[in-house]
Figure 1 (cartoon, rainbow, N blue to C red):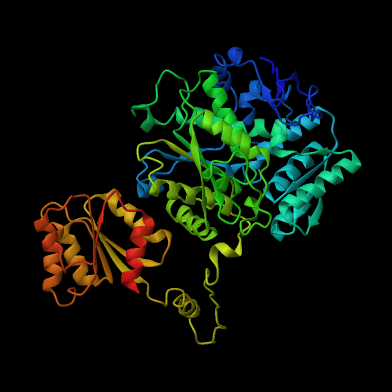
Figure 2: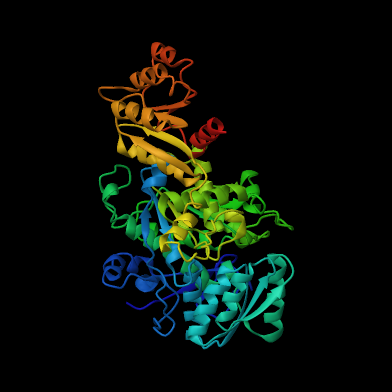
Length: 561
């Protein structure tokens, strides 16, 4: 089945054939146009066509603006996994939380999709030289694909881009132009350079291939969600559709191209009858550069530019989203709704640690912004516990940035020169003893439910150095506490045979353990008599299912100071 694509002007509605080097509407001269396809003909056959193809971006070629797949340009783009975030989901009370792992693209970010499709379209059109402005990831992705396709690339990068990323761009043979200015000013310089030389300019949200590339994320999510067994028995969304849309899709937002394309993809899927709904969109920005958030919360149709972004997260420093926000807002209001929210850099950096230590994912600060926004929306009750949520993990944290770890993140071991009479292992053992010389706070976690213990230990491990002990019964907890003498005990009340109240009695009767602070975490709604039994004997009472990681960590830290 061949691709047939038209472009429709969003200002006057003029419809014309698509060509990569045509930037303006023939009818009114407007530059904001959108690709359209034969949805009625494609919808019924796309699932079977996709199922017969490799798991990559080109699986959905009937709804992409490239006539012929070119293996010369292909680097394995698309087909990234959708991961069930069981640990983070348990912490947040979201059993249906999933992560779209875009770190696994050829250059480590979701921008590989944009570069792959755009370079393929330009190669097909015979274009040999192009210009773009970037805060890092776009330039890296385009550099890789331009090198493979034999297209000369000029990359204008703001001086705020980490030197490691600039060097990676240059490795591919890209001509790097470092601009000491904001990202928005850098875009203006790049546009003027392209105009003077008559070169193709990557236009972001005004570029047909760029938007169409991002929508493949939606197609993959919908197809992948349909295969998760835990969702097959969940009530709510109709099972008549072959694929499944989530209730929420969350992504960090800079200029808005990604969310604009993804939301278009979900709209197309719903239009073709492949999914039963369009999800709510969660757009998350950094507090230091959040023009869309400000406009959304004030009910404005246009975002007021942020002239001087104040964020360490350079990839999210687009201060002027222009019309992209207006179109994205319009889409959201007409389809699944959603929300814009912002988080601080500190919240994002803290979330990097949470994802790494709870889910084994090392993510870039921009991706962490989305996860920090997820936590914020869950806390506010905007996202409900039974909803299916997908978060775009937009990229890998490499190269590591100093703000993430700070000082003292590694330990030094120096092997001394060996004396003649010294055994070979003695110097090594002496050096290794320094690695664990300092004493970490000792915390005992008591709960008869393994998942509950795992949740609490994961939360503690995610943001601190603790020596942890687990007890699966009251009897074991008492014996372990007497032996290990922990600095803090996190205790469940409802356990068979020896319950939490009996554990407290035993602890208080022993002079060695009587003063150990205790945090009770319970699913039980306590009676007035039970609350009286706890008075003066515990330091905090937390209800299971109602606390998040920060709540518990704050309590732990306050008691271990």
